[in-house]
Image (cartoon, rainbow, N blue to C red; front, side, top):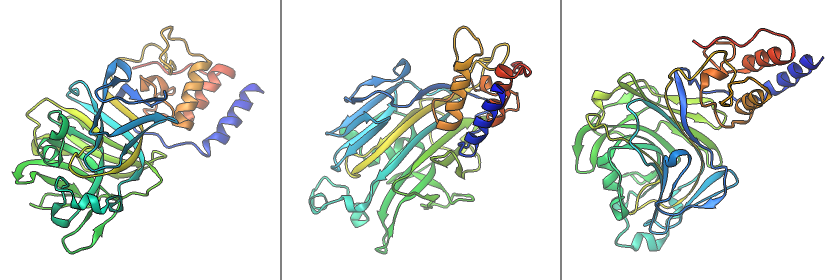
Length: 361
């Protein structure tokens, strides 16, 4: 009876279950969920092993409350960023969850346009922020203006609301971009994803997706086996856009092993608004993190499979909570995926006398 009750409960939950990322072959190294409440300070390192750092320029603010980081930069000379403190590994998957994006052109005021320090783009005004970008260096102070980013980025998923030369506006665009080695006066040339192919023409700025204001999105960059892939998901982890792989030989700066993650509002010479950051995850290629039987989902040192592991797996599957450090441990039935069948399998083992979880490879 107890086993049947669990199965019925999880079946009901499965109706509203979230989709899951395909992280087979990866394991979580770090994940920040902003569960504590505090006000960020410029230069403050935080999260596990201090792997992240706040960079707040000219009055930019980040406040952590309600389970997310609220970034607020109401003036164009401000910037608010989060970056990694250490060089990224050679292969990685990075994922950020960002939403409630308020970077429309209407944020600007007459005083901004009249300010000689404002980057007006010759009347083709721009306003935006980064879901994520990978750079080959870190910037300091007012050095973090637009041109610095244009010469130091390697790949980026960002938004940039802007006026076009014909007077029209591009509103709520998401761009998925890698930088080519070739440059012009504005920086490394863009290669943008059209939604179906990479545009490698000399000048292009294709919109990959159009975002909604009051919604969450996951942005993801995978670098592995000599290629990069960019992805965009909705807040329920449903895939919206995925690029084809790009050889590292086509990307600016790949001969330089220095790589840092940045996200947030980057520019000290334009851009103003606010946005919420809910999650930052760094995954690395899976090693032999899975030991013996699968099922130690919560990563406890005793390696026992118990109710804490079941609770962890349910929260991850249905509530979008912290992902298991070793994803292979959560693949209870060894199908190379994590879904409702793993929960059913684990419930059967714990309460119904079912078979033990599969052995780790």
